[in-house]
Length: 118
Image (cartoon, rainbow, N blue to C red; front, side):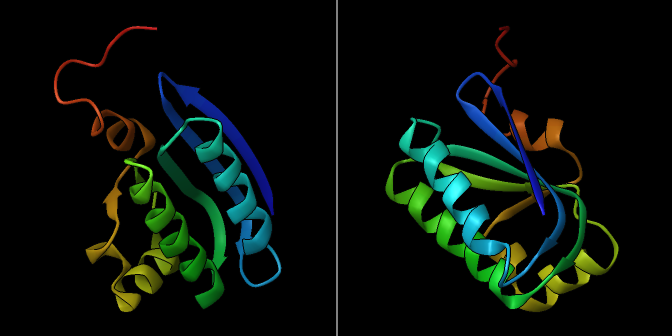
């Protein structure tokens, strides 16, 4: 699994590439926690390049969501497709975490009006 982080204002966008499973979820959770500890309580998780999502990955997403909400933030999921979308729907994760078709939409959802400039 590879993780890449970029930022838009006070939103951290974490792009995941590869498998999100028992082996990789601790690193993923640590990366997200570090972002929240650095003041980025609002997160977007880009799953566009995730090719496998296990129950451990789902658990990590739920734990990160709970942590961010405790800090006054939230978590959005973007680019959920194919088999990953089926797993998220079967697990009922889409009822707990807001899912968006792309990163732009997920990021924009944090801003009630026009998106502020850099």
